[in-house]
Length: 216
Image (cartoon, rainbow, N blue to C red):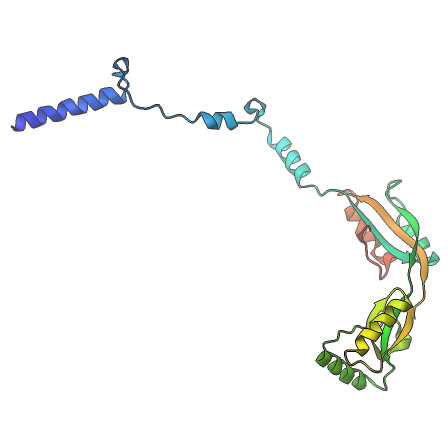
């Protein structure tokens, strides 16, 4: 009995070896072929793959990481500031900068003030917070100490907001002109790329309180 078992195991092992090595393929007995033709079909131009040297790879990586050129502007500037900026732009490539005329509309605000002291301003801020009304600092020092409840480009828009605030409990506000219309020059840098970005720091002094921002 034991001999029969050993003989059966030997025959089974021999048969498996012959099957796994495709020795029985002529008789139609062979393992299924494992292939993934869909992966080959999904390849995109495999013949285009090429090896590159390390220096070329670094250049390719640097060009990929380079930031796209962006348009920046700042202003408005008066004549004196514009002259100073033109001196600071000396040495920049031709066509990389220009000045354009610009206008800032007048600013009308819903105003509360003037108050006798900063303490009075603090109390008024607390009252406005209780009413859920926002406020902001003034840009015109001559109106201090006081509060702005919002700025608008026209007197009519400011008066409309004043009426809305009155319905919410604001009683002592009024509409005033915080700033007249301003005309001047806008500095425009149409295409600041990686070669020009390091030069932006050199303009900070001439820009003064103005900052470069994305072009509108």
